[in-house]
Length: 451
Image: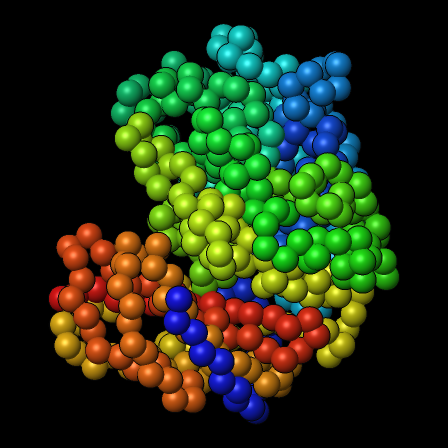
């Protein structure tokens, strides 16, 4: 991995507003068991400016057999939204695009307290499964992204309903409208689900059979890398204390072994991190990697964990934990927004590449031997903080294994375009970081191909 850091004083002020098109998001959660679901939902609330949140479905609570009874706990979701409601007047000082609390309350739905394939089929429709259908059917040019925190039973029921009550053409059109990121096949129905719906766009984030379950990509949210960023000390300073009622609701104890801290787990957060429009993530390309991990299409047609190399480790969860400092600092800043005035808080930089502002990835074609110049001049910070620039070649993302000799000068990176294999490209990630407190980073992905 190639990288460099330079510093540049910024003289411009730009307000913080969401850049680019928001992603649509629907969540199903087994909230009511392991408190990491509450943790993930608290974090999601301070990102409610970045998504159109169209559903939060309370599915069967806990993992199978965990609670000894079959229940759903939508009131826990409502409790978190009411805490969000209390800090909402302050959050909109930082970004006017935060979702209204009343809109969020309206999309809380109840799923099936029972789980498994025996509860999919005739007579098993729920408010949650019907809401999934309604949202996927809604007129919108954007796809509906479904983050499965817990069980898939309500999702499976929605798919069964459409397949059995619509024409094959209508069913095909329906499943083309959704993308699914599933944490760990909790209801143990994935094999049956994908057999019934083989054309689904589906990420199953789960360690491969025969491997330690803790190797799974999504577990990089709390395992591997610098785990001190998940400690009680860090959480108290940045989330739990002096950050308002939303921070106070964040559960302080969960099960994180072998992480020694026992506080932050958030095992479901990667499922919506993946769809976050942050300049790094590209939801239509799981193989590109980002905050939610990196995935590859397997011979069964769905996407499964891919290995990332970071530091001295090559493991799927590295695809998440490699970004932990950035996403934890980002969380800390947003928790500050819950209680602080705009001029008291830090906000992320705005990245410009070759004069183009935005978060969408840039795809550029060059002939072999061309002189390539990438320039981040024009990048700025809304708080007038000093900026640094780091250019990284993300080899796994582009299936490119060679080393590129890159020359750096100020905000610029220059190199000669190499010969690429037909199925490869070069992914360069520009990370622009500020010197605020906490330090925040913004990204831009540049994809280089031969023409």
